[in-house]
Length: 314
Ligand code: CP
Ligand code: NVA
Image 1 (cartoon, protein in one colour):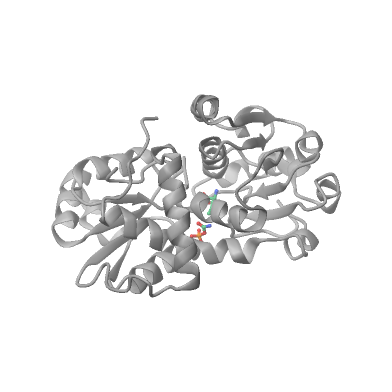
Image 2: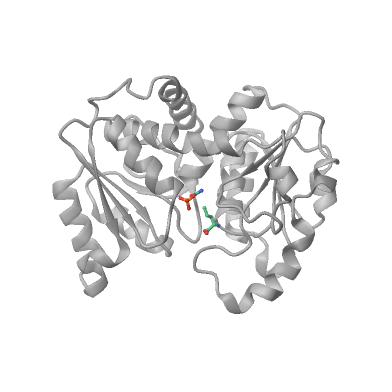
């Protein structure tokens, strides 16, 4: 496996290896401080980022490499140079490329034309590196045995719900996406892939439109912003109205298991997708989850550059 372009590129053994190494990096960030010595990693972003940018730059630094951050408007790509040519040029200087942008197709094209690992750091369709941090956080909290546990995403059917369903399927988990019907429900193609993976892993995929039924007896309630980067402001009012019943409130949390937790990829909008008392309350794992963005990206870079990952056939 050269690249991480989609969440489904990862196999279960790859994820186990990545989480194990990330857990080591959590306790000893400098464990492999020469892995990227004299090497550079390009980080190209055409959308804003706090966590992914900073955790990628610090991960490269901890591995002894040099991060090169490039804003969307800084490459000749914006003036008509092709993605293929850009991929070849970056490959001749750098050891990996981390990219955040809009179209998944652009990331796929970079991967196809680069000789170095290309890592999807968020597209309109997916956010695989976030899910590695989420699952390490889940692991730390609940342990490896997730039998009988239900992992519920509530809100917009977007890049995060896609990644949540696929990653949960690979992990053999019972995962739920609770969204409005229609426009803001998860991509049917992604749901079909998740279902196919779950058939092999022993997982279970559900798409529900009733937030209370989804929250009942859940171990995790997860949510994301209602307006993603690139969403049209013209749809805001209609979208907020449709998503309001899926806000994670104290009332929804009261329906969950006694040992349940709240998770959020961040950034958060308190009073919109989550009640302030939930995200800032005792069940919230958001700070540990954000901390693991660095440990998991560090692990991913470490293993991709060494060509340790096998990938999946999905
Ligand atoms: N969760 C996440 O990807 O955060 P940023 O947009 O700040 O990178
Ligand atoms: N769905 C959000 C995730 C941010 C980490 C977005 O794409 O803006």
